[in-house]
Image (tube, rainbow, N blue to C red; front, side, top):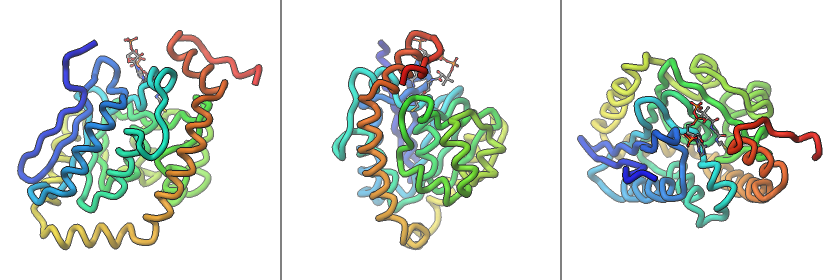
Length: 257
Ligand code: COA
């Protein structure tokens, strides 16, 4: 256990920064962390003093994705689940969101980027959407958004094989805007988000709204259907084997399914 706050929220120069802060567990996201971030983003939506949001992690890591212990022992699903509230908040925020990522960006650590407006990655970032390896299916509307960004074949490779990919591949797929050195990615992301916060707020909001018009309802619908399938798979034997194997630090055995 740690007495550290696992998500730090701060607002400066009209930018709200949400930073995952559970480095001893590679910033794996718990229900408390999702709920804290969802509440912060909802507050940002209502607060005229916030004009843009930055999402980041800690010095070594963006996030290793959902806490696998939570997946095994405390699975949450449905619209009220903290993860659903978090995804709803980032996918509907009218103000711009910039992400600054480095180290592992696993699972939702990659799929949440599809809801950001600009992403800066350190050249050391390792992306992965390992849902199929965990006996799960895509979430966060990634099965809808990724093929639109990257085309079917690249999306299929990333989602079916679930292997690691680097910042260069993420850029070629359109998931990120910029690659920077590990000691400068955060400064670059801060420059971008501060630039956005200094622009005329109504114009920025309307521009973002127009960019997303036409896909909003489809994204929410896909998030709902993926979420139902994900919850069902999470309770199934394939996911249990995959996650127990991770916890026991052994290879999973899917030969019996
Ligand atoms: N949930 C819970 N705990 C996690 C975690 C997760 N998603 N990811 C990492 N941790 C924990 C590890 O269990 C370990 O805890 P311990 O020190 O108490 O044993 C600690 O964080 C450090 O992780 P470790 O695996 O030793 O770090 P690494 O640098 O060798 O590897 C990762 C980093 C991210 C590649 C690896 O931890 C990993 O694959 N994590 C699982 C990612 C995942 O499948 N996420 C779910 C996506 S849907």
